[in-house]
Image (cartoon, rainbow, N blue to C red):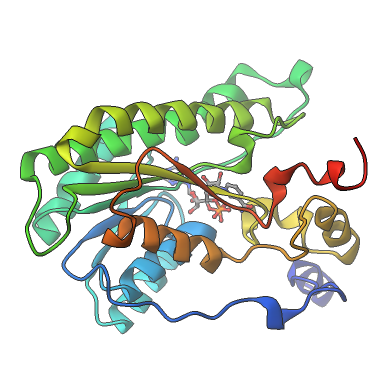
Length: 293
Ligand SMILES: NC(=O)c1ccc[n+]([C@@H]2O[C@H](COP(=O)([O-])OP(=O)(O)OC[C@H]3O[C@@H](n4cnc5c(N)ncnc54)[C@H](O)[C@@H]3O)[C@@H](O)[C@H]2O)c1
């Protein structure tokens, strides 16, 4: 790789970005004895959530589909926090691979208490040129993948039930949604549809499972600094454009989402089920209306 390419790959810190506004909050050990599985845990938000859960005391199954070396790095970091980690390859859109992954995690840890269906991707295109394959791939990973994972988790949570002294709930599911479960997104019809689908999937599962003491919630991230949206934050111009959509005037960091996931998974959120917690610096507040309308 040339120096020029390397410089291009390096995130440019826009002048207006103030690192002092990024929180650095330690985790409390609220998830001890509650093994977790996180999909897409070798990058971005999934990695941060896996590390956050581990710092809060959970052993963690780290799912990946490509780049095993980065999954191993996440596992080593988890072990560095004194927790157990297992690395599991599975394409979340494949039923047999998902079922085998959950079975392996349950075998390794004895059970699971927390399931975070985070894996997701974008394949953007204007509507008229969007192929059926682009539609099916995004729905297959982002929506069907979350269904397959949380169905496998539900089976284990219902089999085992509440374990007194560990958690008040029989299990906690967290679906990684997006502000685009609510905000339409031209040029991203497949992605926005997958996230809109997660809303109803999550709420219907929450309604069905609440009497079994299983809590099901979603997180709706706004713009978070990860590889999935690098073009939107990696140059000063792009960052300035992005900030027109973010009333709180900073990009979200993966740890902002991890803090929310740990809270939702903990008994502090015991009376919370069927909600989407938007972690978006106000992106869903229709910032265009602050001065217009
Ligand atoms: N970054 C943001 O601004 C943002 C905003 C809203 C929602 N989200 C959501 O957060 C989640 C994580 O995204 P991210 O920003 O960390 O992006 P990312 O690209 O860094 O991570 C996505 C992860 O999903 C994995 N993945 C993709 N297809 C998979 C498959 N078939 N099976 C298993 N794993 C697969 C990738 O390998 C990667 O580990 C996604 O669901 C995304 O839609 C992100």
